[in-house]
Image (cartoon, rainbow, N blue to C red; front, side, top):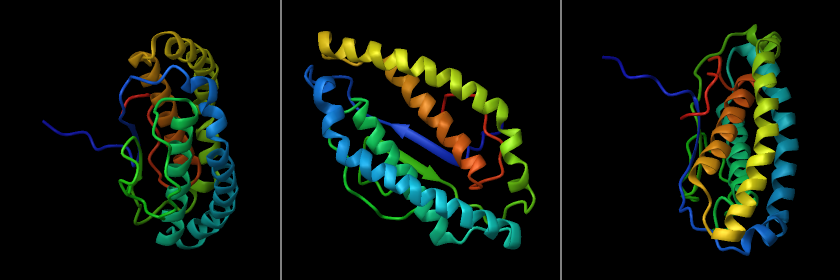
Length: 198
């Protein structure tokens, strides 16, 4: 019996379902500083991904510091998003430690990327094309997520509990998105699964 090898981009979330009823009303506002930083880090990631493209084309490798920095941007984004969507109450840390493995600073939102020792030199030229079916699926999942967020908003406001199914769906969509971005962003060569699960 063989054990399945986990996908090289992992996203997880741990947290209680109880959320103070007032949080959905103001938490998005409290998240603005984090969202601005996350947006800026996303712009940095775009530049690093362009550098990454040439690195893979010419050397079939990603410099480890470059990979770690990109991983940090995804981690920061997930911590911020999970807070802005009121999946948790704890404010995410201002943590900028570049590392592929999650540093454990935020126990709720975890992102770990496996560093590849070597990549296919030519895949950067056509990965985007292979990812088109995933982008179509992600578009549908994103639309569904809007309705899930609205339902979660009212559930928390009226009951103080985030329904586990709704939360798991949002975490799954975020995981799906991360895997797709890691594949197209040249961080690994393994085609992402059509699955929301870990």
